[in-house]
Image (tube, rainbow, N blue to C red; front, side):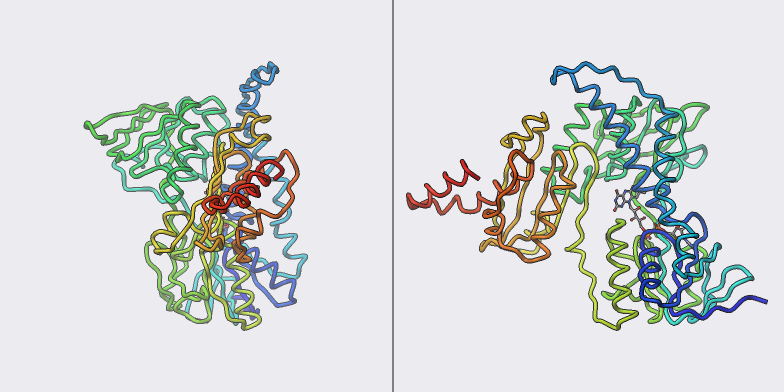
Length: 475
Ligand SMILES: Cc1cc2nc3c(=O)[nH]c(=O)nc-3n(C[C@H](O)[C@H](O)[C@H](O)COP(=O)(O)OP(=O)(O)OC[C@H]3O[C@@H](n4cnc5c(N)ncnc54)[C@H](O)[C@@H]3O)c2cc1C
C-alpha cells in the first residue's frame, strides 16, 4: 500500500529550478515534497555549469602559463589530464552539500528518490511506494543532449555533457558537433588542455549572439588552433576501435575528419519521457512542455519551469527566475508574467561573450529606433596592462538614451555585464552611466566610455565639445 502525501507543493526534479522552488517554499513554511530520480543538483551541478566552468578554469591556467612570456615570465606547462578530472570532481563535491538530500530534509522538505509519474490530473506516484496529492505541482525535469539522427552516430560511443566530464584521459582529437555555447566552451577548454579539436556546425557559430561579438570569440579560438567548420552538415559517423570518422557535406563536396572522440553538443531535448503527461492533461511537444506567461501548463494545477518548459531560455539563472515567478503566483497569488528580455547570458569562452537585454539584431527586428554606442578594449588602460585587448562593448539605447541592450565581448565580460543588467532592469538612461566615478584603471571604464559616446553627435557647439573632451580626459 502506497504512502499518501498531501503537501501544498510537489516539485518534480531536484536541479536548478526545482531546488529553488523547494528552498523558497520551505523558507515560507509551506509543506513541500521534492522528487528526484537521479542526482540532486541536476545538470548544472553534475554535468553542466559547474564541471564545465571548472574544466575551463584549468584550461585557462594552462593558457595563462603559455602566454606568460610577453610579461617577462617563463613558465613551463604540463597538463596532467587525470588531475584535471580530479579537480573538476572536487569542485562538484565542494558545492554538492548545498543541493543535498540532507540539506533539504533539514529544511523540512520531504525528499523522495525515484522517478515521478502522473496518474491523473491531481496525482503523482513514485514507484509503488508513494502517491502525492498536492495542491500544486511544479515540473522541473530539465533537459538532455539532443542527438541528431546522424547515420552511424549510435553505432559506437559518443560523448555528451553527461559523459565528457568523466574522461580521465585526454582525447587525442575531439570532434565537436555543434558550435553553440556548450560546444565552443568545450572546444576551447580541451584545446587548451592539449587535444586537437575540430568543430562542425550546420549554421553559424553562436547564432543567437551578436555576430560581431561572436566573430571575436571565433577568431581567438582559431588563433589557439581550434578548427571551426561552419555551414557544414554532418552526413555520417563511422566508429572504429580508438577512432571515429565524421563525414560532412561542405561547399565543395564531402569531407571527413578523423578524431579519437566525438562530442554531441547540438541542442537540448526537454525531459518528459516517463512523466505520463497525457494522464494529467498536460500538453507538450518536441520543444518541451507548453506553458503560458505564468509558466502554467494546460493543467492549471501544474507549472513547468527551467529547461523542460517550451520556448524558455535554458540557463540556471533562467530556471531560478522561473522558480521565483512560480512561488509568487502559486503561494501568494500575485500576478506574474515571464519576460525573457530580462534574462542575460554569458558564453564562458576566453574572451567571454555576455549579453544583457536586446541584441542589436533583436532591437532592429522590433523596429526600434536605436543608437549604438561602442568602446574597444584596446583603448582601455587596464586591458593594455593585462594584454587583454581583444573585444569591445556595444550598448543599444533608444534615440532618447534609454538603455535597452548591451553586448560585451572580452576579458571579464561576464562580470562587467552586471552593471548593464541593472541599468536595463531599472530602465536607466545612458546619462546615469556617464556621471559615475569609476576606479582607474579598471575594465569597467569601457562601459562609461561607450556611454559618453552617446553625446558625440551633438558636438555642434564648442562648449559641448569642450565638456566631452574634458570627460574623455578626466573620466
Ligand atoms: C555543459 C553545460 C554547461 C552549462 N553551462 C551553463 C552555465 O554556465 N550557466 C548557465 O546558466 N547554464 C548553463 N547550462 C544550462 C543549465 O545547466 C540548465 O539550464 C539548468 O541546469 C536547468 O535547470 P533545470 O532545473 O531546468 O534542470 P536540471 O538542472 O537538469 O534538473 C532536472 C532534474 O530533474 C530530474 N528528473 C528528470 N525527470 C524526472 C522524473 N520523472 N522524476 C524525478 N526527477 C526527474 C533529473 O534527474 C534532474 O536532476 C549548462 C548546461 C550544460 C549541458
